Amino acid sequence: MTRVFSGMQPSGDPHLGNLLGAWVNWVAMQEAADCIYCVVDLHAMTSPAEHEPETLRQRTVELATGMLAVGVDPERSILFVQSHVHEHAECTWLFNCVAGFGELRKQPQFKEKSEGRGESVSVGLFDYPVLQTADILLYHADEVPVGEDQRHHIELARDIGQRFNHRFGDVFTLPRAVHPQAASRVMDLQDPTSKMSKSQSSEKGIIRLLDDPKQIVKKVKSAVTDSATDIRHDRTEKPGVSNLLEIFSGVTGEPIEKLAAEYDGGGYGPFKQAVAEAVVARLEPFQDRYRELEKDPAEVARLLSEGAARAREIAAPTLAHAKQAMGLLPPGEA
Ligand code: TYM
Image (cartoon, rainbow, N blue to C red; front, side, top):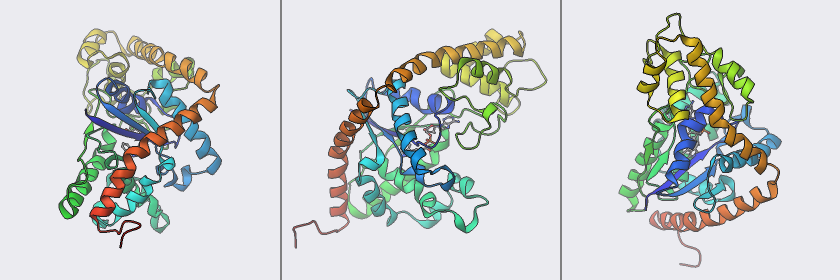
């Protein structure tokens, strides 16, 4: 059976990009694969601006609640918190000795996030993709459902895994990224040339999954488009309209071309209204379920402990195998 692994950082409220870029596939893949999903709290510590201890604890619970609300099924899949399975941090060290400084320095996300921060940038931020490699490879994941922005990180995980296997023997499975057909990169509503982001989007540019319907309608209606009136998908010429078409397709499951043909000629007003209504309808069941689940944090905690125990059953033997392959002396042997 195909093994799937993916993770999300508890670094801000989850938004429409997270849902359409990643969570939609997380849920769908449970039908036919063996899925493991993780709240990657260690990753959320890599940027000082986003790391406030009390907030981190709270967001970790909220994100796990969100994953359950969106449809991650703890009966079928494993859901856990990264720091509960210490093998992730330990495996990162092994990979630190395989990964190259040059390949990490070139990672687009590192370049973007470290820009203007000079020497104060944390070693954790630099090492972020190596920890992500450990997340994926510890579970022998075949497929990693993520948004387009994670493509380079998954390629790096493949490269590190391949290099390890070549030097130390066949220990790790090499993963591949899986992106959704539409909306693999949801853009900021106010600046459709930048991605919608927890840390960088303005309030009007981002749709949070728990925004109330009125806010959502207002944000979609004030999304930046252009001065023409035609509705067609062209990311270069019409980034704003294309983004709305991708969102529309992502929330309804209808092909982009069909939606464009249906709304072209009617002007941006009715089109935006329809997109807004579709987003609200898509988020309503999620929001209802979230409100139910957040009443019972003890149950969320119980599910996460169970998930961590199941995750460790897979991660621990993989780590032991990797350590042995690298020549680390097993305890009790001489
Ligand atoms: P994070 O928390 O930044 O994002 C979580 C997921 O949401 C996707 N995403 C988007 N998709 C489309 N449009 C957007 N605007 C958008 N913004 C975010 C991301 O691609 C991601 O799939 N490094 C990962 C977390 C991670 C991970 C892993 C992922 C840690 N370990 C192992 C997979 C496997 C990240 O930045 O997540």
